[in-house]
Amino acid sequence: MEKRLFTSECVTCGHPDKVADAISDAILDACIAQDPASRVACETMVTTDFCVICGEITTTAQVDYAQVARDTIRSIGYTHPEDGFCADTVEILCKLHTQSADIALGTNDAVGGAGDQGMMFGGACAQTPERMPLPVALARTLANNLTACVRSTPDLRPDGKTQVTVEFDEDNNVVGVDTVVVSVMHSRECPISRVRSLVREQVIAPSLAAYGFSVDKVSHIYINPTGQFIIGGPNGDTGLTGRKIIVDTYGGYFSHGGGAFSGKDPTKVDRSAAYMARYMAKNLVAAGLATQVQVQLAYAIGVAEPVSVRVDSFGTGRIPDEAMTELLRKHCDLTPGGIIRKLGLRRPIYADTASRGHFGIPGRPWEETDLAEKLRSALN
Image (cartoon, rainbow, N blue to C red; front, side, top):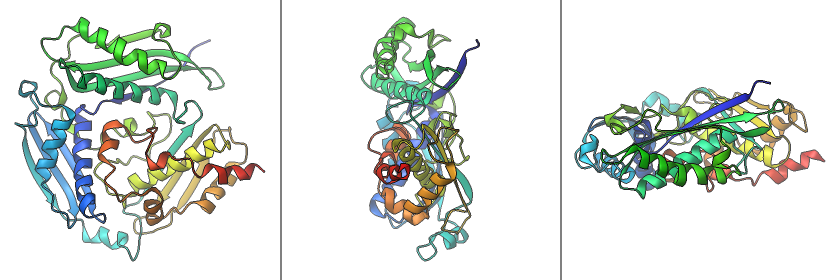
């Protein structure tokens, strides 16, 4: 019988697009730290020793945006001038203005409406302890472990990518890990044999072991499959905020509404409602109401209540999907203001999401399962 395979990818914080995400979210954090009501929609582009910061920011905070960007680039690890992108030499251009007054009309405190129209999705399943799909959970773990390896190994550089292919049976149960792909930038002096040995022993083996798999049982492992990876980071590929939306969510396993997260304050439901949808989906699975759930929310600009709420349990629900939808409506305030209060989103918590991941990471408020007990009562 043909293998049933599903693949997800992830990137490290040194990937050009993630560098851009991290700068945008660091600027958001800097604004919110001084002025929690800051309105931020910050976009960043990075290329060879050049960074452009643009967008709309309305805040009372006094922030040196260029210095925030430079400090973020340094913290990621771009400190080598020979790599073509360095915190000390990068040219930074800021083109920022205040938020549109027309948009502000719908999101001010008196109205409390959504900052834009759109649909957002959240998903959860029982494949891993963090209730994430196994392919993206493994790819994320590999990426974060790769970042740790880079920071402890002078010959490695911050840019990296991971990819995992998982085999499932016809009932969607995990059979095993079929393929692992890891690529990491390195110095000119570092031989590819050393790169492959480091990645296999310090990144792949412990990442697989964390989920109960052995590196020796994986059918295919590719480490820097094209050979050397010396030209990388923003010097090798231009990076833009919001270009890794599937990496930021569920690796394609669940739907995505299309909106990016980084650089957006929580009045933007692209971000806050996606976090809330994850919270609700995870609590439905934690409550035992289903083993796989996707929650969709949709909003109209300037309107506080969602125009639609939908639960899809893909046939795994112990109660009807419509009943789960009603439970969520009963127990959750789904207005932007209610979401912000519930998840505590007016805090400088965003830069870390751009670096380590938005979902499946312990400590995020939308990863809590404090609603599960109330939802579980529906089984009675």
